[in-house]
Length: 150
Image 1 (spheres, helix red, strand yellow):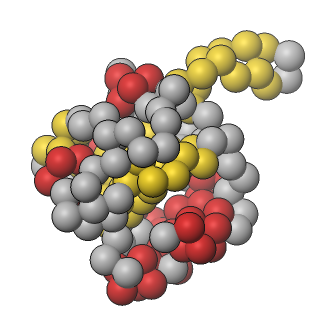
Image 2: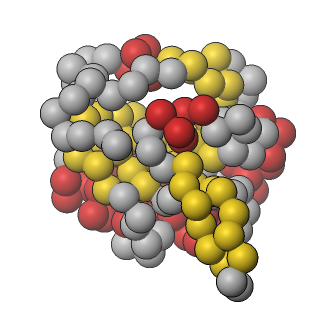
Image 3: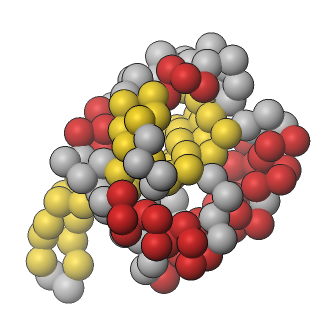
């Protein structure tokens, strides 16, 4: 489990643009790292669009927003284009980064168990430490809650 005040696990993932992104590349500014289950689904779209609508405020505060899901680069590209998302989406198809952050968990839907993303957000400070971990959040209103925590 990721603890507040601890260094955020560094990682390297492919972005929606096909570029390699490392968390450590953002050292010196806060990062909002949010994990979501699947591109273009109702809850994930609500959450992404709220981050999109508040993106200018995040940038004014010097923060970078990064979304991570198990979807591939092509899916991220379509999702980003369809909803005009101004921030980077990262592909974690083998869910290694989700596992590092403790958000790849057993889920339950319609009585069936499966492994998937526990929708969560981590605010990482300028020094690369976890400032706040928001686990199992609800999509609606989440971007505002993150802004309040920044």
